Amino acid sequence: MTFDPFADTDADEAQTDLPSTGPWEEPAEVQIPSPRAPMDNGHKVRVTLKGGSGYEDPWITVDGADVADAADQLSDGPSVDKLVKLTSTVARHFHKTYGAGKPATQAGGARQAGKPTGADEAPGGEKRYCEHGQMKFMSGVSKSSGKPYKGFFCTAADRAEQCKPQFLK
Image 1 (spheres, rainbow, N blue to C red):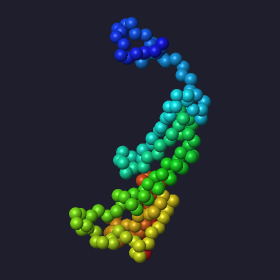
Image 2: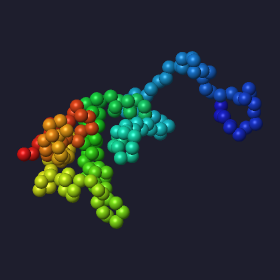
Image 3: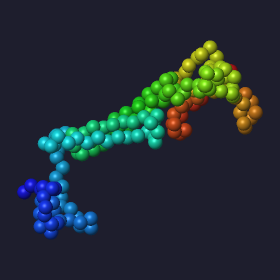
Image 4: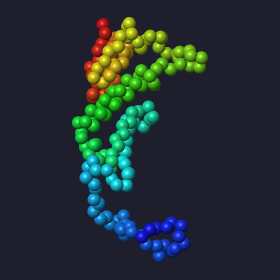
C-alpha cells in the first residue's frame, strides 16, 4: 500500500503500514544489520564528538554505514582515546600557532596595553614540547612565595594530565 499525503481522505479512513504502538508500549524487536554491512537504502550515520561549545574547539566525526557500524567504531576504546588525545593536541597547537593564540592588536595595529613586548616570549625564542604539544612560556612573580619565576608549562586542558613545568634559572 502506498500513502498519498495529498489525497482527500479522513484520518479514520487512512491506513498505514506502521505498527500501532504508543510511547507507553514496548516496540517490536528491531533487527540491526550486522556490523560493517551497508544498508540497502543508502542511509549513513554520522556521530560528531565536540571538544567544547565553540567553533574554535576541535570536532571529530565518525561516519558509519549504519548505526551498528558507527557503534562498532566507537566501541574500540583505546583507538578512540588515542584519536581524541591526538586531535586535542593538534588543535591546541594549530590555534596557538595560527589562531586565537596570536597577540591581540587594536585598530591601526597598535599592541594592547599590558605586558611589555616580549614578556611572554622565552629567551632567544626558545620553544619546548611535551607529550601534549608545544609548551607555553610564562614568567611572573609567585603569589605564594613572592619570588620571580620563568619557565615552560604544559597546555593540557585537564590539569591532572599536565606534564611537570620546566623552570628556567
